[in-house]
Structures are given as C-alpha cells and as structure tokens.
Length: 112
Length: 114
View 1 (tube, each protein chain N blue to C red):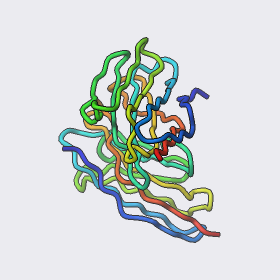
View 2 (view 1 turned 90 degrees about the vertical axis):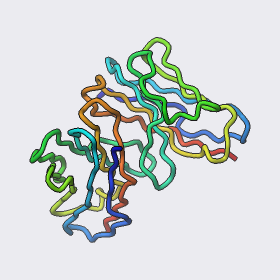
View 3 (view 1 turned 30 degrees about the horizontal axis):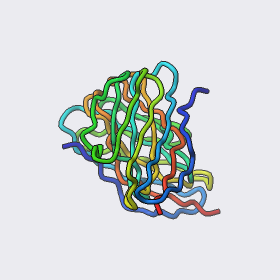
C-alpha cells in the first residue's frame, strides 16, 4: 500500500537557522508529492508540490525535490522565521487518481 | 479568494448523541473529501465523493458514520451515536477533479465528545 514516513518532531530551531524535514514514501504507482502546512487551530494549506522525478517544488522560501531513486521529498528552508512555526505534513497521491495519503506531521517551533 | 467553508468550527457533544458537520467546497470542484485528524496525527480519509457519488468510503465506520452530497455541491457528515474516540478534527477538502488531486482544505470542525 501507499504510505509516507516523516521525521519525528518536535523540531525546535532558532530564527535564521537552516531547516530540513525528512520525508520518504512508498507507492505502488508514480505518485505526486506534496507538502502541506497547518498553523494552530487551522486547516491544511498547500505549501508546495512536485509531480515527477527531479521536479523541485518551491514556495515562500521552502523547497523540496522529488527524488525517485531514494523515494524521498525532503523539505528545506535556508533561514526560518518565527512565523514558520507550524506542523508540516508530507503527502502523496498515487498516480494522480487517488486521495492524499499523509504522514504523521512534524511540528516546527522557531524561537527568536 | 475561494475557500472551502465548514461549520461549525467547534462542537462539544455528549456520547451517544448525534452530531453533524457541513462543508461547502470551492465552486466548480467536483471532488470532495472528508478527513479525520486525531490530535498529533496526519489526516486520514473517511470518504471521497465525485459529484454526488461516493468513490471511496472504505475507511468510514458505517455503523455510526454517514455522509451525503445530494446535489453534488455541499456535503454533510453525520455521526450517530457519537463515542469518546470520535473526538478529533474533521477536515473537508475539495479538488477540481480526481486526477488533479491538489486539495484545498477548510478550517475544520473540532469535535469533542464528553
């Protein structure tokens, strides 16, 4: 079956530090990959996506590259801000025709 | 900007009572999803609609949960009777169609069963 594995949180960083949140996946087909962000008390917002191998998704300074050879889609940001504090979810949709399957989420706290 | 609307935002109910949640997807979105998110976990699919038809309800506890999307637009998710273990965030999402699966989420309904 399809599944997503994310690094355990919480992750606590100082402002302007470099962020990496690891995500690996298992899929039966050729999935599209997503990162969603959830701020406290809110629903999920799409952060970025990639639909084929070697694609790089980017938004708001965040990036992730679709690595088929390592089945990974790690999220990175060069300099985090306090406003980036949230829970980040990696997700996949297998072959573009199935609902999203989510990882368990990684909570990020950025301190000034 | 178009949004997925959900109501209520918060609901407290006693166990064994009935509870219902409402969702209005983004206009023109044919696919609608209900997810359940237990605290500290990722969302898990309960049911997926394509227009008014159920596409996937394999994870919906059908003995107590029901969902409908009668006119292929807004949707209602019902729990009867509610159990303590149903306490969670219920998220509605919509996408343009089943192939373009970039989903847009509502703010969710936080259910507490006491």
